Length: 337
Image 1: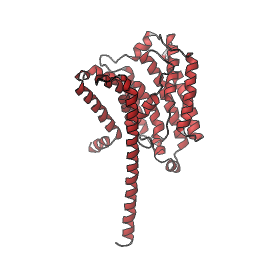
Image 2 (image 1 turned 135 degrees about the vertical axis):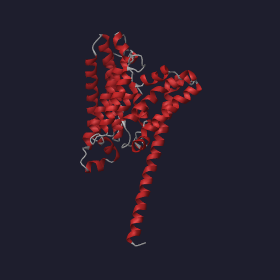
Image 3 (image 1 turned 90 degrees about the vertical axis):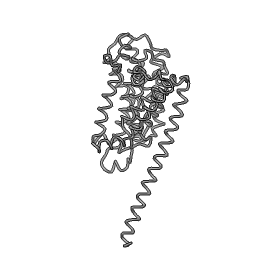
Image 4 (image 1 turned 30 degrees about the vertical axis):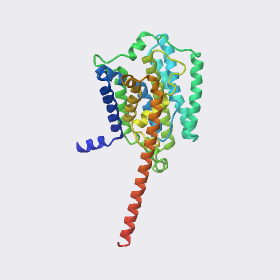
């Protein structure tokens, strides 16, 4: 039991959870009206889109890469889901299109970054532009709305009288399953590649394939998030998902995932998604306008990136110091000192 407690307390996502709790507590102390079950559950229920995006991009970040096309992929699949919902279509074709669009985009990114070795930021930025163009062509430059009532009702439905959203419950299950899978031998390949791609290759880990799979998973999760977005918000503009990729990156870093790769897990990404999606609601209760959303998101992203870089630099210096001390001690023993 002590070993388990020590392991949990040392996990990077625990700090993220404590930060989320602190945000809620501070908001509640400033405005006691926030301290209601419905308000707190609303923060979790409204976080599903960001959680999906953060979980998806976490795979690429853990391998040391980035994917800035996920917001555009989300916008495209949301538009497709919206058109299907206008004719009262079923969820199955929506899910099929979401997985197809996400997987195809992920394959393109995977080939460009993992196989052709193009810098991930540049390549996925190009992919983002292409997908954005497709969104505009598909929607005809118009907002897609007037969905069937059952589609939007499901997006905001809860499990009985618990107040827990159906989508959020699904997210809990997804995070639990992925956490188990990522703790398997093959699941740890993502972190191994991000930590030391050369060393991972030497021990037989297929680094190129791992990065390719990471991009496919990132695309699929972005695609599925589009369905959730359409169901929850009921209308899709041509810029839907614009800027969401940066919030997803910030969510991952807030969740303890290192931008240099090799550290983190999906639990942290999910918690970070809750934090990023809750900012707007918390600002309202703190008496600020939601116009500050982008500014605060940008400041948080800069701050956590700087902190992450400093933390990584300190870890490298400590490791180098330990190696030097070990060599000095070994040398002293050989000399009989």
